[in-house]
Length: 397
Image (cartoon, rainbow, N blue to C red):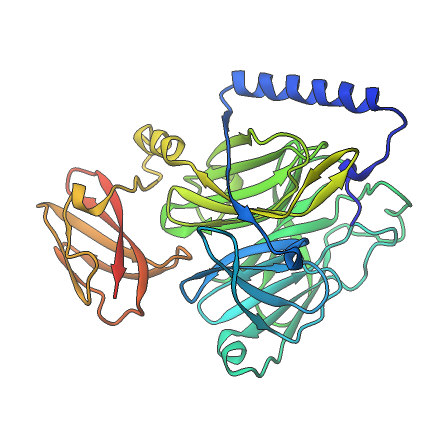
């Protein structure tokens, strides 16, 4: 791949001047209310994952894969970044940049599009999760063109200029949502695609000026929150939080940019949520202009920021504030089945899995029976009669 931060400029002064100008711009953004935090390095990834491009939870583990060659899922140790095990799919895409999922399917975004000649074979490959577990992968193809896309016009050598690249996607109930990586405008457009095999036009719904290039996305449907990750022109990473939107119009609610104070050359490529307030990210191996960064697994704790958003949520956007269960009465924890809520005035209980999918909901009940759910960690969100909403993690044994 070719990135803006790959370019070999004549002289170091240009790089220094560019760095100063970008840092000054970020300082102004912070004055305007943007946040700045530091992601913590969990560990260096195996060199096998130097081109990590996706991050997602599946079967209780955190998984990643590379953007080229056969798609192989690698489960990561969330305390070290080491590979725990690997699952080969046998799928050989051209430039695979994102993995999305719903209850039944994986969706592989074979839509990387920043090469000299733009692609005419953009697609999403879909296959059943059950097929992956059985070793019989039979992918379907969701082929598409972007609305207004003309690959014969937007092309050139060297630095990419196209606004029709993509590295980020999430799966909704009825549609796939793609977020473009725009090399010319540094914006992103949210495009929609059907989830069924066929050939389609991807229509743009909304545009956001992200001031950089979007490389990954994860959805927290229980909180009506979308997280986008990416980096600016010198590979300084950022995360955007979208919250309180309606009907999956992701850019129609609240928006907050969070600059990651991790320095230059951190080419962040993917993001996944650990719970409603903590995230994991990966970055590719980076070696240019004297900067060297290995591929890494990063953790990002946004507890304070998301709590502030929830506390100031006068519009009822439903952001969860995750508290430790013992602080407000989710017992027993861990559990083999029934969880009791030790507070009166329960109006609604929602149970979500590690991917943010709603697994069950109960009206006005203080006992929640999760014995029918697979073992693992779940987020239990409780809405009380006074309008307050609290969430906590429960482990099902």
